[in-house]
Amino acid sequence: MISEETRERLKTLSRLAGESTVIDNAFYQKYDVKRGLRDISGKGVVCGLTEISEVVSSKQNERGESVAAEGELYYRGIEIRDLIGGVTSEARFGFEEAAYLLLFGRLPNRRELAEFEGILAEMRTLPKNFVRDIIMKAPSFDMMNSLSMSVLAMYYYDENPDDIGLDNVLRQVLQLIACFPLLAVYGYQTAQYYHEEDSLIIHRAQPNLSTAENILYLLRHNKEYSELEALILDLCLILHAEHGGGNNSTFTTHVVTSSGTDTYAVMAASLGSLKGPRHGGANIKVVKMFEDLKANVKDRSDAAIEDYLARLLDKKAFDNAGLIYGMGHAVYSLSDPRAEIFKWYVEKLAIEKRREDEYALYKKVASLAPGIIGDKRKIYKGVSANVDFYSGFVYSMLGLPMELYTPLFAVARMAGWGAHRIEELANNGKIIRPGYTAVSERKKYVPLSERK
Image (tube, rainbow, N blue to C red; front, top):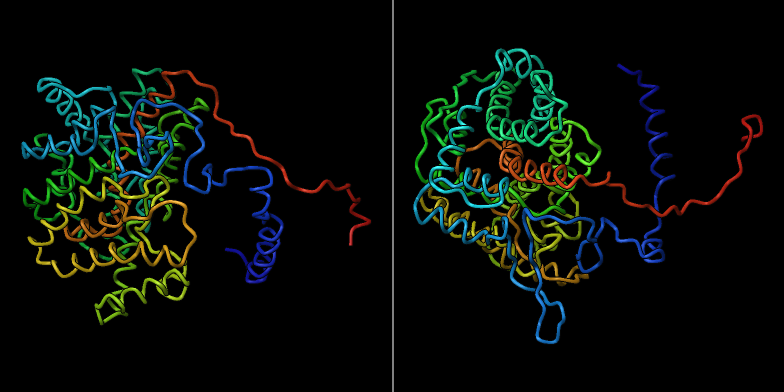
């Protein structure tokens, strides 16, 4: 523990550190630097090639000009709506098929899919005493940190952890895809036992169940879930499995992989990125924002909701961050295809759970928010609801604890991260090292005895 005097000194030093590193926004225009690797229209700086997925937000018109378009998302060239449609038309689980597609570049036939599911089922077990020695020894309040700790610990249980040959890395990736649900759920259950004095009931994963079914089976004391619940959770996993090479956590996967380090270090770094509220933690912010709206806006008229949304943007409501969470996206403008797919299933689940009124409120905010943002902000592309706008609401209707919202994102995204790690290694690329323009003033060194 540090003393109170040291704490106060650290506050002073933190102010000094902050003041010494603020960069004038004008420099970004002066030196033509794309802040966050994106220009003012939202177009990203191209720094890599990928065959794994594609995010489309614009198309060329007849004059060859780039114009905003309805969002599209492709997994290995297959549009996400077609993938979802093919799975749901047969009323079956599709996350495993999506993972196969991302990893191996094509859809599996029936035999290949069954074999792949069998491999995941065999691997869906943790090393002996791992739960006792790792997860239960230091239960964390934060499930993403717990997940990162568990992933790093798996390095020590791996007989060949540092081999970055593709056969070994594929084994590690499949093991992590299989085990992520266990690491997330067991971490949550242990934390509830130690910190919330809840009962500790741990189930073993079932080899005959899909990833989505196993999550619900592991999480619920009575092991029970409805078919609709499992199918919609499976849909969530498919939609979150991958989203292009440029999103923050997947770019982290490429960057850290390019250094030549081990799989577990790479995935822990990606988890650290996903944890952030600007990335994987955004759906929690959406849920909490709606809780604040419902608590403070009793009149559900358009005018009252518009006033609340305006106050959000003016930093006078909720967390005073000036954001309407779940609205807008770094790439998409007119629509996020994942959100569009979600809408139909969200409504269906809301009817089953008798939460139609709450769904109506979500629809109203999604309709009103773009206009408010357009009035309050200078925007260079369209604004629409993104996938995070609905995913937290879906998880809440499934009865999933908020602490697991972001870890479930990680469970799904492990498939995409794994595919991108293999792609980076297979192409034997250089270490990723972007350039930074220095804007500091040149100064002379002053001897210590002469400083004031």
